Image 1 (spheres, rainbow, N blue to C red):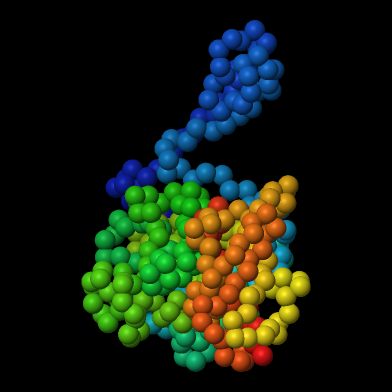
Image 2 (spheres, rainbow, N blue to C red):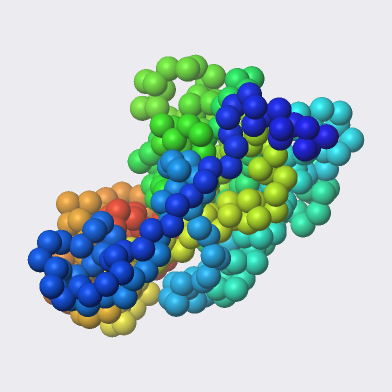
Length: 398
């Protein structure tokens, strides 16, 4: 049956496998007498001897680029110790006739779990601790509750939550990537950052047929607050459940990935190929790696700063870390956008003194603090475009 479908689709869509051509640059022969620049793809001055090397010219942009699944040399330095919750969606649906299935009957729940399993392998090879909301074709506890799945990341002390899905549309030719965050872009800022890095990697590796869809969306576009499809609602406080429940209930940076459309018959056939699903998992892995490696800004109490301070308006000494890893630049001032630097005490913006050369912040509340426990929180953007996480640092006022 699959062969028949492939044959018909190749006739109807002209989607036969494209031939590629292999070129060698620079051309064979002595190079020391060349005065013109080398051909595209060659690095170095024109009079530098270079060995010929191959590159493949694909027939078009949509030809899948190579993916060798080789872990970068810095993968453990970047990711080791991270905890990630993976949520393969729609488990336990095998008895629901026609539910979340492509034209051949291939179930979304199966492809979601395949990608999650492969992604777990890549992450664990980099020292990441992975928690799955399910590891088989069954419904998650609490009757598959979206809240249970999202809060698992919090219960397991995870750093990130990623829900894995594939898409469906009445338009049979639809096939693009969509990655979702909850609420306004300036609300779950870290989730938007994670989504952006994963989107860039997946778009490059998957080469889906509608690349004009950039692929980064708020789940409020699907389910606006109060059910009103009015963009002005994005400037109001959310008064009732909206967006995707699995993102709304997450307390850590959380995204939902719709990898591609199994309602597209040609794409469904590709999704049946485990190596194609591995490519998708690899793209998500690289996106996570890019995101973490480019740094998450953070603050900590300075080593001289006690956790118990005298009130009512103490000055708290903090150390600022831009989270980045680039060699000698660790000795430079934090690489942040200064205008974005904010410290909040109990969610109220504090007055700051910033000493960039020694990466220190002195934060003072604008109002007197009552005796008892309080929290500090950072908001800042580093030069890679990553926002700090909403981590809170406790301290006590006597």
